Image (cartoon, rainbow over the protein chains, first blue to last red):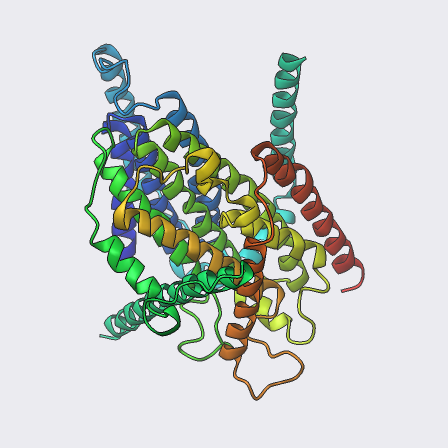
Length: 168
Length: 328
């Protein structure tokens, strides 16, 4: 399990690094998808089968394709017109400090967060599988689930209103 | 030691699977050319080998020996990568297909609990091959073609998944083996007829098969995402499309025709053979469709996907849900 964890974690980190470092937007999209693959493998190693597959279907398959769609259409040429993007220094400094703070916080959680938590063996056998996940979603957490559905519905209706008004 | 043995067996199984799928696609191609020929009062390929049997192999050899050209303006890395992604994902769908009743080593590559979802996830990733292929060749026709193909595949994937929800609800499980085993008495074709219609149509569109073959509409649309591809790279895209077509037959067999379950109580024929018989039946239907229907217009295609197939799939889902909640 540790090997899977290390490989998948490295995949995810490499993908995210690619997003930051790659020059071309399309490469950034591909790195994002790569890191999503790593994330899905991480979920699998944590016994969350359903979450892993959904990560691939929703984020890897649907959302990133839309990103790719927009980016490929907007910057259809391989070398985009605006080339000198990386010349601002102060945002860079800000970014490093915020990133550093985040890293410290994550390190604190990672190093000391496990005290008094559940151990591996205490997770039930069907944890994270479709049936158990769905049961939890529609019994224990049905209210957040419905609220989320409502929020998504509002977003869809908002888009309909915006586009419809534009066309009329 | 044990884990290495398991790993080795997995690799062997994967190799056998990949090779047999590729061979199956070659057979599919040969019969496609023969049957399409007969439909058009021609004889199809006859020159290479007896009855033209070696024609697919000859095609592959020809493609392999073509000069490997990469357009100057293309993005070399993604140009090389996208056919591989596309083919890999088309092949990946076979990982979860059950060939024979549960239990035997060869009955399927793997049996994940969320089999249908894994299948959908792999199919969803396959869109990248098409989307990136058109972009990487840095050609306006290629880009437009890939946009067209991507939009089509995403839209119909939705209808496909929505129609599968009916099957999942009917079975009460997302495992492929459970879905096939549920059809021992009655195949899903009858209780899920609406869902079957939607699924079959959507799987044709996923495969860019005939009424939906705009991605390869050469005469009026200048091909599509593979316009700038040549040699074996084009061959890989072509192979991907054929694999998708075979996938359509295989998935329809698994979800709606009962997979390896025997029909008419003929249990002396082994399950694997029944599986092949059903797939062959559907493959013939594919050829039949290919030489019968004309191509959709693009806007009609989108309207059909979103305003006809998706509502029908939703209707099927609601009907199934009501039935399962009240009587099952």
